[in-house]
Length: 300
Image (spheres, rainbow, N blue to C red):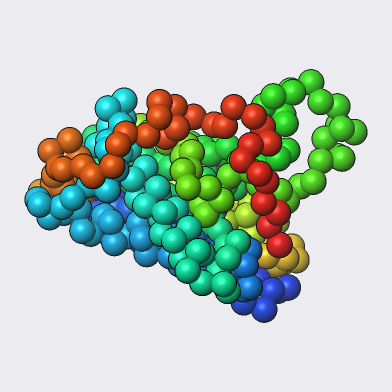
């Protein structure tokens, strides 16, 4: 298997600057979307810092003498530990930047990342916030991530809420993001990939404006991943373009004979040195104990 990917980010129709960022690291089959927020127009700084930090970590960790910034979680695979570490490292760098710069105080970003392993035939997905990952398979679309939002956290804790009670909850408040706390809880999962699978990573400027069936139709009705990205962005703008819009699409297809991805030749995290104590049990991949903890952040 191999992955073919493309991405587009658009300012939308009602914003004057773009706070979204995305990255495609082909050699590592790594894909990232980040949606910045907060500060004095510093959301773009946070999202860019997130994508750049994760990309830099994946590139640097190729070296055999690389010093691992966090101790690995033995419950997770090598790929999950890489994705988790990259996101945690991005959180640390965003916090450090926000403490050094008055203009960046209060900035943060959501993030969703996908790491494909051709050898294991798996897609590993990590996310914080409400940037989403979808999977299109057999003409059906499935949301792979759960939004870390006030609405979702309340529904998780109190599934019996009535429609009237749901309508009273603010729709644009997220409860997890990079830059909110020194330690960030990252949701990590793995998915058995199949030939023909299409993964869609996006900011809420897309998912908030375009319904899932429309996303499905746009992806299936496009000739290639670039065309699908363009169609999704156009749909979000046709529906009002109220926010920045980012769409990144990854298609799984048969690889050329003998093709090897760099992501399958990296040294394993377990063989490298560490310089920080292990995070507490459950910190890496479990949601907060309270549906409203940590303090919520409203996205402009």
